[in-house]
Length: 143
Image (cartoon, rainbow, N blue to C red):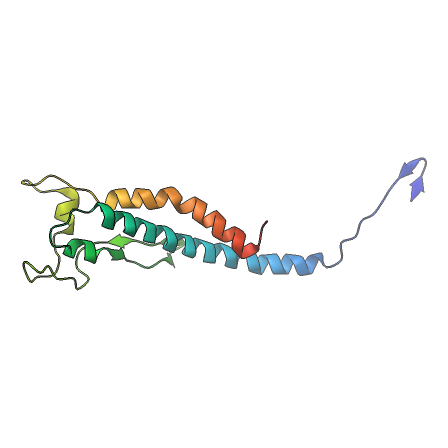
């Protein structure tokens, strides 16, 4: 439209409401899925790291390292964990379930700390954002 030398153009976007509904549903689902997948991936990476650096005598402590809890949403947060000890893993030397994971990690009055879980969590955490963004891009197909 021309009005005193000024040109006004109008642009209409048909289907915008449909796009908005699609994004309102797709983006939150993709964020949730990406968060859980990224936690799973990085926690598994941390488990591999912990198993590589944990001190080994019988190997029972190494076998007890696992993902627990599994990635989940809990009270508005996303959580996953790496656990060592227990889990039904028995030390072949003592015949008892592994109950010394904390003593190895933090040490005792007679033995120095030999951290393996704390560094594993840091290792996993360093890769969490990269994993999340990579997975999110795949889920929403961002090129």
